[in-house]
Image (tube, rainbow, N blue to C red; front, top):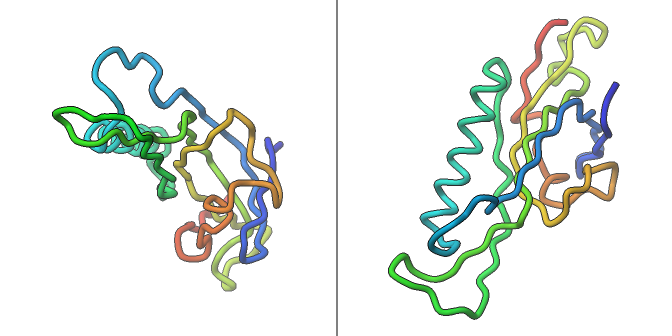
Length: 143
């Protein structure tokens, strides 16, 4: 059973079967959000996704960054990621037309950031998430 389905801009639909969410800056005690911190957060999220799903390709949706009019510090300007980090396991019909759709499924782990802890669904999912080029990124696996 899937948590939801997303329809990509290409028209293809994929099922979301697992979703992990956490606060982007949860536990952040010192400093301020900046490029260096955000790069560490993003690399860590990608690494955890690769370790959790070693047989599935992982794709990062580039996050929309906010640059508030706030004085930065020694690490440069303030740069803020959306408040919710997400990792989702998606599956769909096979990418290759040579694969039998009864015996094969395509899969992709997607890492992205969003503004609310809502499960993305249908045509209402974030446009950056819907713009994923599934055929280029997902991999077919035999069931």
